[in-house]
Structure formats: structure tokens, C-alpha cells
Length: 103
Image (cartoon, rainbow, N blue to C red):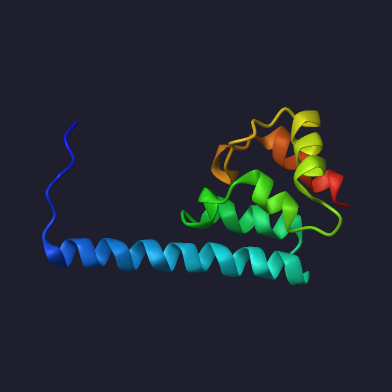
């Protein structure tokens, strides 16, 4: 499939939408880091919001205290979550496992 040719206005609109999406995801992760959102609440929000559904699971886990890359990978391995998985791609048992991990 060929990439469609976009007008300058369409390109600007796409850039603006992408920037806004990145900003929204960054604010989401900042709220998690600050403790304003629990992991369960964050997963609920992501299930209802297309932009937040694109956050990687590893990034979500790393927002928690004392969770770095290694520990996040261990948790994901234990729950059978692929390293590149995004929140949208999680199954019910995986979501339940993540919530249980942080209780």
C-alpha cells in the first residue's frame, strides 16, 4: 500500500495530533509516577482512551517506585507479556496479574 500524498494543511494537522498524543501519554505517566493514579485506574483509563492504549506496558511498570527495566522485564515474563506489548494488547488475566502485583 502506497503512502498517501498529504497537503501541507493535512501534514500540519497530523503533526499537531501526534504532538498532542505524545503530550497526553507523558502526562499520564507523570500522574502515575506522582501516585495520583493507581495501576488499576491507569489500566481502566487506557481501556477507554485510544491515545493511552498505545503506552507500552514496560513504560507503565517503570513509572512505579523501585521498578526499573530489569524488574519490569521480570514481572512481564512472569505474566507472559511480550516486551513490546502495549496496554491495548493485554488480556484480562494479564491485566489482573499486573493489578495484583501492585496491591
